[in-house]
Length: 454
Image (tube, helix red, strand yellow):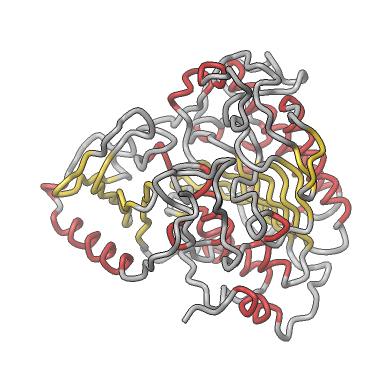
C-alpha cells in the first residue's frame, strides 16, 4: 500500500535536526523548448553561450540526457517527482494543462521541494509553473516557500484576434497574451511584461541566494523562454547571429552566468549543485523562432531523439570534476541525486524511476544498465536500453494526425546512429527480446490513476 505524502515527509525528517549551513544547496535551471543543438557546448554554430559553455567545461556534460516527457506539463511533473508522469496522472490525451483545466499535480505526490523542505531547506520556485492553478497543485501547496512567475505557458491567455502566426512572429505583439505575473499566488502584473521576464527571474534567483547564504536552499528556476512568443530585453535584442531566438538563448546564458558568479562571490559554489537542462526538444513548427535539435531527429512533442534528448549539465566545483559522459541519464534522476546530496532517504513509500547520479558524477562509477521509457501521453512509444532504442510507435511532434505502428519495432543503435536513420531490427532480434522483457517488467509497475489533464 502506498504511504500518504504527509507520512512520507514525516519519515524523511524523523530523527533529523534542521539542516546545517554546511548542507549542500541545489539549483535546477530549466529552459522551455530549448533544443539539443542550441548551446555552443552542444555544437551550435551561431548562438554564443560562453557562460553555459564554461559551466559545462567545469562540470559534467551529458551527451545522452533526456527530459521526462515530450512536452511541458508531464516533463515538469517528472522532474519534480522523479517519477514517470503517467504515475501521477500528469500525462494524457490533452498533453498539457490549460487555463481551463480542472486538474493539476496531485497533493499526494511528493515533490523535490517538499522532500528538501523536510530537511530544513528554504525552497523557491521562479518562472513558469504549468503544474496546476488550483488549491493543492500550486507551488505554495507543493513545498515551495516562495514563488515568482507565470502559472503556465506564455502563449496562453491570448487576447482576441491573436493567432499562431503572431506567436511565432519575429515581432510578436507585446500585449498579445494576457498571462499574469504572480508572487506567492497573488497577481502583481497583467499582462506580464515578457521582455523583462528573464531579467526579473534572474534578479529573484540572486535575491534568494543572498537571503539564504547561511542556510541550505533549493531554487527551481524554470525559465519562460525560449517558448514562443519570444521576447528578449533591449540589452539582448538584435545582438545574436541567430535572430530573435538566438537573442533569447544568449540572454538565458547571461542569466546562468549571473547565478554562477553569485555562487562564486558568496563562497557557495563548492557546496551548490547546479543543473542546467530543458523540458523537451525544440518546437520545430515555430520555424525560425524554434530551436535546433542538432543532429537528432524531430523535436518537441515527439519521442524521436530530438523530442526528448536535451542538454544536461551538472556543476558543483570540488565535488563534480570536469567530464563529458555518454552514459544515458534523465531529469528523473535529479530528484534522487538531490536527495542523496542532502543526506535524505530516497523516498520512503514512493516509487522513484530515477537513480542517484552522484557516484557517477563525482567518482566516475558506472551506472547500471537500465531501460528508459519514452511516453507520448500515456502511450509507451519507445524504449532505450544501453546503446539501443526500439520504437513501437512513431509520430511527429505536431502535424501528423495518426501514429505509425511498428511490428516488429524499429531498432536503432544510438551510439552509431543518433539521427535514427538506419533500422537494424532484422539484424538484432536478441536486442528486441531484451527490450521486450524490460517493457513487460515496467508495465507491471504501472497502476491506473486519474487523468489530471482531461
